[in-house]
Image (cartoon, rainbow, N blue to C red):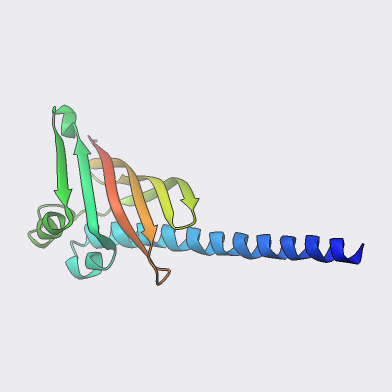
Length: 144
């Protein structure tokens, strides 16, 4: 009897620990999204550098109803920030949904600026050092 209670309490304590870790990861992911928004808005490549995974890609499909898919690799994305070709707005962040699964997350976000609205799905991964980085950005960009 006592053995069964001990096992149940151990399982419960383990699930609480897992739950606490998930909450901590969720907070880290949401902080990552806020930092990403700030770095892009401020066109700050130094801040952005540590937020983007080396394999980061942005996939922009049918920009302003165009027919193409534009894939931008991390280096080109960083160059566009340095050259002030993207960013520079003051956008409000609305995190709509975060699907967290151990070492990966998919986040649906709206970045609302003065002239453009980005409705995007971001993917993030947790590195071995428990830090999170963005792996991809799949925005729909709408003129306001």
